[in-house]
Image 1 (cartoon, one colour):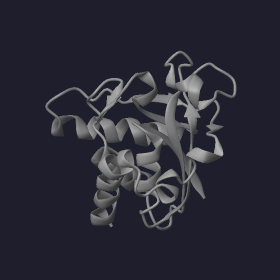
Image 2 (cartoon, rainbow, N blue to C red; image 1 turned 30 degrees about the vertical axis):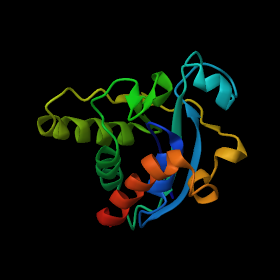
Image 3 (cartoon, helix red, strand yellow; image 1 turned 180 degrees about the vertical axis):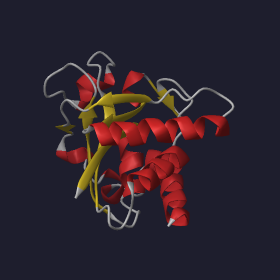
Length: 168
């Protein structure tokens, strides 16, 4: 089992979308990339912890490659907007990929370099070594599944899930 940590806006949306991908075994919402120990959702929402809302994606590389995961990640969020995704604004919603090995770092950097010509604007996705992943509070895990009629989920998570289903 391999793992990669990704942030591309609200973790409710990215979690729901990535659960649709074949080969993805587990998705956990959390926080990473900052300096505050064991942050809470309220702390991260202030933008003062340095953390982003992220998901830890555990996948079977025999069924899906890191490149395919990155391709999907770039499909469901805008890697050219700094500190924002859709209606969510702040550094906690930034585009970020946190790697856990030099090989992963190389794959991520090569992928981004290959993608650059496809975008009119500059790709601002932060690429950083994962120091620590902090699991989000239980109410944020499987949020879309628990709250499918929530207005935010209907407007923002559902379209990402549809993209996931068409990506298979």
